[in-house]
Length: 502
Image (cartoon, rainbow, N blue to C red):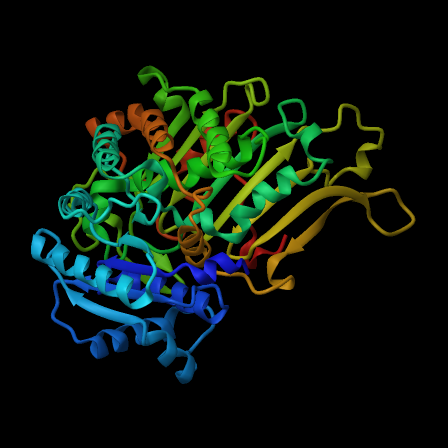
């Protein structure tokens, strides 16, 4: 590893340190980075929350989470004890300046002890309504003056709409430089997602065919078997558009559609993503019904267990108008992608949990084979599976073994689990934060263009109550109108077979 990483001390402040995100994701990721020798020699993790906890009690709480959620399984006591000796807890009220004075004292203590200025990371694993409060208090107490050494990490959702996102960006810009702000989207840390860039830009055979002349259409689907579980209160204010499409899925569209960057610097890659968002066709109010559909799940059975409909979930309005499913047809209006549809869909309580990108190529211009040779004919398709397995498959036609000329689709497959153990998304992103690499993080203008693109849909759906909700049952493929959306163009939704065996 880079020796500069080991020599630069790091001080983590985790706001919401007693919360579920830290227990399930952040601390297990930091522990795995520690085991793999990616953390600096000098580091400390300061969790904070409103509860009164001793360091010992706090470490025990995080140990339980790490044992349950770390990809490496249960901890080895000696290794955990070494790691946990760097974890501390400070009770704090994020609206009280006294807490920030304690943070400042902690920073000064470590600077003196380490005889070196540390990188200070403020990780906001808290409710979005606290982002401005914490930012303002950090500024008021002079805790962000060193722009080269101070970073702030903000979880999604980044704003509730275009105006709130602009407001938050403007506030943060008065406190931090853009290079200090890390708007985290865990999807971009997934190994298969990162590999889209490597796959696209390191293989000469792809670039000549990566355009409207050879690609018929693109599909991006993210489905979940789970319902909203205990997140009903949050989901009522979000819905599928805000929760998934505005961030995760639009970022995937950008990775597929972006032009080749001049180099792999953070701003150059993000510039090309912004180009995609700017080129995406804006929605006219009168056209929304033709290009976007929404759904809400009703009751049903999942794996032999009866589950409630969305309106019967905890903390959900019995007459809720919130969508739990959305499907949209996008267009990127530039030379490369003109008139190539990008179909995007996401939903809860679907038939399977899967995240998959399907790039379907145009058919051969002239088939030389007899009709009875091509009964199983399929157009070539590139399939990038993010979950349940991580893989890249190229579907092509080949002759079936035998005396007759009969064509069958076959797969050329790369599976990640057969290559090496892959890190969790948060491990990748946390390491990038430590090293100051913003390539996988959203910039202010990216956030703004993504919200701007979706605002006509959000305004339309928020203002008009759906009379058909609920319109799909649990453990289904979503509402029938979603199939009609893509069928009108002569296509159908690509779905991974169960167990991801193609």
